[in-house]
Image (cartoon, rainbow over all chains, first blue to last red; front, side, top):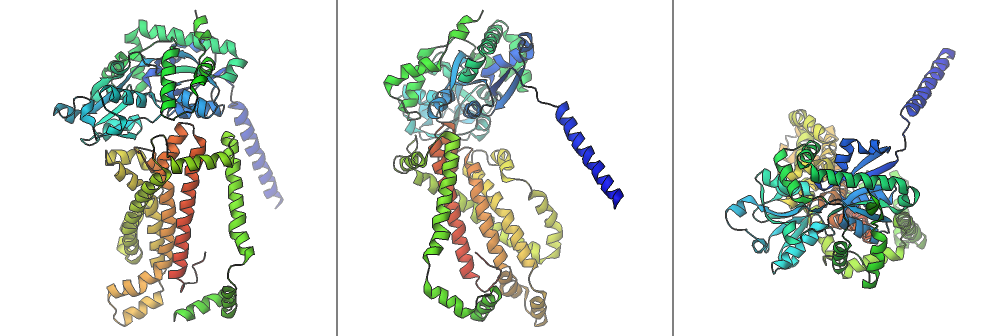
Length: 327
Length: 282
């Protein structure tokens, strides 16, 4: 009996010591900055380039990257304090910051354009759908009601003399859109690289690039939580500097950038190149474009705001100081 | 025969029939209403208040406002809460009906026939641990543009296994004495199934249906998260995406309430239809 007790105590000690040793050995180190980004989003190539090139380490920053399924979840990440900064669409950044009081500030643009309306290849080849008028009474997949793509779809329909009620819009995950296309559900709108991938796989054909709908429209941005800006403005400045450097590098070295993107996405280089050429990599903030988008969200009742509140809100929501201070 | 069974049941529970009749004559007492309705409702409201406050700093009044807005005006696309609910009910009813239609016959076969059990038992056990949500990516590939089909498939998966397992267990628990007597008197297999096995397995099958519907209903949110434009699960997702937490909670409360209501209806029906079995209890 006594020996059993000794064995039990010894085992307990071993277990406790092991747990403590593991905890000490793998003690989590707090990074200088935690950055959120979206899964498989070529719009956010600047982050990947900076990471691959080791520019964060070069700037003396330890970084933790956290991947999110979409911008809305990333905004929840901001709200929950999981991330300090993040690459995400301007649409969820606006919607969630207003509706849920998530205190974030947009510091730079990550990209412009880079979305497309795609149609079922069979329907296009048969000549049944060559433009938006062919989509009347048909299903069109889109990423969600507050997305930039939803706005572009409504705008494109309006430009073609149609309205949103002329189609059946169904929210879906971009990864599933191309495989879901049929003659009755023949179209989708999504961000790159999904349109280019669908085209490469002979599933769909682009009938409108977002450039044709709204040239240089805003899409993804680099944002930071207000708390982090207040606590660590020096780190924020460094990240913005790296972002600007990455954006400039992408524009100056497209072939290498496509190589990094191809490796990152794990797909063939051809669709990545197609997608890359449809995206404008630019870090400059365009307040007017963001205001247009905010007005749309108010009009669609996605957010509630009086017209007089738009100006003061955007004064807080957009901060160009950091990007303007970048070398 | 039936009343005898009821009396036997009552005696086993310790309530004599006269006492039961007396309680029935007295009707529902205020204290019962307090304990079974008022206090649980108050606790529920407190829990939702707690969740809403800590999630988004909302109060019950905010949720009530969102609820009324959803009922009258609808969401951003003008689809009302009633329309979302109706569509969800259609999907879940389809999935559940399919699950019942497939799981009950299969459960009887697995429970009654050794060969079927030997062959299909391991197959069922290999698929059973897979969570319905894990099937979502495959269901999209399987059903492609048939989004309703993919959603019904996920609900079917959720409901199928509880019904199957319970039916199988019920069939296997059929009294061997009854089966032996039936065999001795030369009863046909069809009669054995309809007169002995099915009635004997009915309580377990019913419990399986109740649990299956509950799980199917839970799968609804997951099923409607992909490729939808209407439905309570879609409403939860889309209001989360746009940061309208009050509407998210309103939709969740409706999902919970309908689930509760359906479960209650099942229990009452079970109690009424199978009152000859003492195992049934609410």
